[in-house]
Image (cartoon, rainbow, N blue to C red; front, side, top):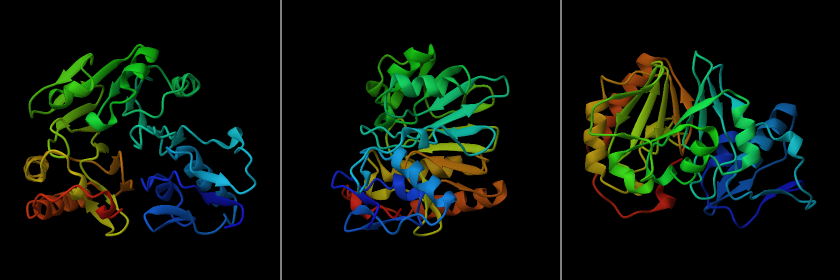
Length: 289
């Protein structure tokens, strides 16, 4: 494809396809550029994909560096949530900044570590807390928390991934962790997986569930459930009726917004589907993004 291509470092994490699905597709287990952008809006989405990609695999055919002034991150989803972009090569995961009414900010999971990026995120407000959804996403939590002078949170089930955490969520009960933010332990993907729900509007789901473009519905990544698919099913069954949100904001997989009642209906249906699943070998290629 003239202009842009995906190099062989691609790990097929889906991040670029989330930002520019009309421009970047999947072929033979990796992303590929489908066509060049056709207008300014598509060009902006392509640059979001470029600067989010954890392996920096989306490159210009000319071989020159991408103009850093075209980096859109942090990128606002609405008035309260910004995407950090710059996904870490250690996690591949999306991370978010959550603005609170007081003017402070919480970071949910972490982007790649960079003092320059940290300064940019700090411009959004004073970061008081770094919330880790589960062990796979803990890579840069301590560095960002120390830089911001913030508290680092993780669940006890995954505490060995961040043994120096400042706050430890325990058990299965919902725990208020900040201004309008509640942690809901959801063991399954890992033993210490947690959802963070803010304002009955935003659900930061880590890798517990996501929005699948393939099925146009909520989905669990059953083939990369490290701890127990049966525990995940039990967790979802407990969560039905307790969770209320409009925005689903996962670490991996698609983001989506629906009316809260419709999201609740789909969550109940996901719990019913997950109850029928059985353990299977880990297979990254089986995830239906």
